[in-house]
Length: 218
Image (cartoon, rainbow, N blue to C red):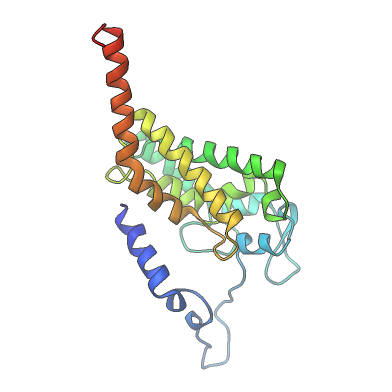
C-alpha cells in the first residue's frame, strides 16, 4: 500500500482527536488571530449549501467553481488547488513517472458515479455535480500524486484503467453515503492498493487465454 497514505490512515483512526477537531487549534495567548478555520466545501455540502454558490465560513463570501479550481478555498495544504495538481499531472506524465491511464480513470470513475447519484439522489449531497467533486477535497491531489504510486498501483495498462475508475467510484461513494467522513479519496486509494495485484493477475490471465485461443492452443 502507499506508505504515506497508510501512515495517515493509521493516525486518522488511531488518534482522531489529535489530528482533527477542536484540540488541534490553540488560542493565541496574545489575544490576536493569525488565522481561522471553518468547514471545508465538502463539509458544507452536507449542510445543504448549494455548490453553485458555495458560502464560505463567514456566511458572506461566495466561492465559485473557479475559486475552488485555482485554490482560493479552505482546506489541507497541497490539495486545495486543482490547477496546481493539473500542472503536476502534466510533469508526471511527460516524465513518465505517473500513469495518465490511472489519472484519467479516476476522473472517469468520479464522473460516472456522481452522475448516477445525481439521477437517483435523495439528498443534497447526492445532487453535487461531478465538476465540484473534482475540485474539492483531496481528489485532484490523490489522483495525481497518490494513486499513481508505481509500487502500490496496478502495473498493466488495462489494470490501470480498472484501478483508476474504481478509485473514482469509491471516492464518490464514501463522500456521499458516509456522512461521518466527507472525503473518501484516502480510503479509496488504500482499498484499491489492496486489490491492485488481483486486478493485474486477472488482466494477465485474460491476455494469456486470448493468445492461447488465437494460436489454437485451447
